[in-house]
Image (cartoon, rainbow, N blue to C red):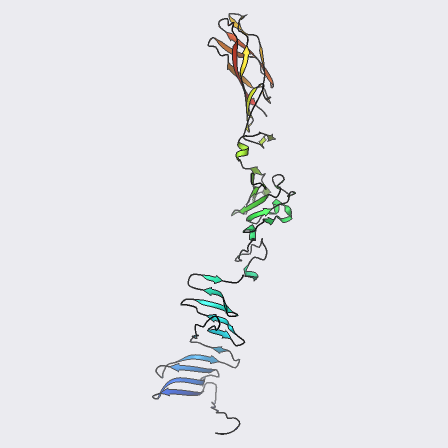
Length: 354
């Protein structure tokens, strides 16, 4: 046939009829293309001439379907097995068995294998945190998210510890931080949350030498007071209290010209002295003998009269304290026999400093 153009027309009477080309091998159908029983163009193949499998189909919209699937070349980074007409070095390839690689611009950007997903470009968009405190489920944590991996902690919301309620690390405060345990001087805060909505906070001072704890109760909607954790500086130091609650060290020990003392955070105080002397015990006292009165001013005052006890350093003599006061006590020695020599007194007063 000659001419500017030619068409081969195979017309069928109805959509359910067939208008196709059949390719045979030894008079047995092996491939068929055309309109086979409907108006969708299809390509079918068969191994026996009786059962046909649709390999490709497309309808009036032009969308191509591959019901049996498709096999593409493994490809390379420069020429992916599946690429785009206007961007031939962007697409998919298979570097090895069980691997799929995503290629853009001739470079492998992502690799999915049986054991891992490797991504070689930054992940952005709604898959990652929108901010350091974004707690949306399923989102990836960014560097610095909740204070992780950052060179400086997250700024505390409104510089207020009461607003640090999202679980995370290293909220930072200015020296004017609100609701912190004293002036923080750049301190940091760690927050954790419980299953019932309770919140726990751990605060560190700037030097890292002190730490405090407190919590939020979902049942009462209140914060507890800050409780300082005991460190080396609080085991032995200056004791103190506020309304009966210890605010300083656990034990305080000291001495002065009036003796030595130990104070405990619970209010207990013990004062001692071992170098007081009574000149003698030769003054008649009924059937006994006694010394002159010896005054002892305690090295530290008591909040109430203490219990005073001690010894006179002699098997025949004993200490007889007078009624103790809060700052001093009068002592005398009594003896069953006269004592002309000086006697060394060892005394102790025990009571409360608050």
